[in-house]
Length: 218
Image (cartoon, rainbow, N blue to C red; front, top):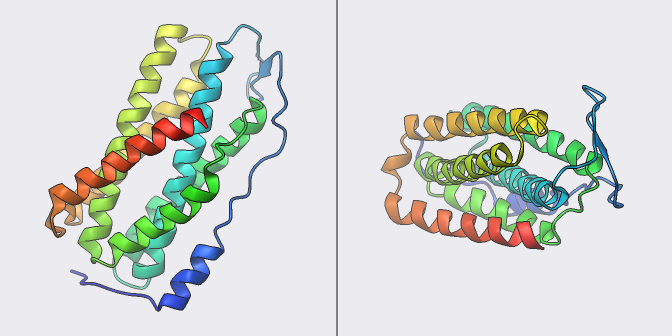
């Protein structure tokens, strides 16, 4: 079991400053959307729905990357470091895919990206300073919220037209399942032993709901 493991403040600040977002270019409006994997062009999609989904999911995956960056800044050299790194690597793949979808669907990023950059890292590092249990409690709270959010999006797209949005649905379902794996990993690594676990989890999830609401709209 790993207790509180801190990194020097200067090291943490360097990592915080190094996380400036690299946003994809190409957000002009488009009359049609083409998936490269099939070459199929969609001309009658509900663009407002897709625009909102991709914007908020991109922001969420970016924020998750910053959270794991903060956790690794504090706990990267402990015996839980490889566990966090594995989850972070999956989040990097999620972010890469949403970067591609941002360009493909001509979606602009949320204007709150600089804020999520800082707050994500602070949340990750701050909970990691509580020890392994604090970091894992954060993971459980975040991943549970994201999985619930993805389920809502899946229902929305299924109600719209499951065939038309088949590829987007496959992506969201895969990422939802991987987020649930992260959630279970957190529980397996003593998340519930974190100080004031229920309060900490609840507070983080309130923040997640606010972040989702704002990122969908701005």
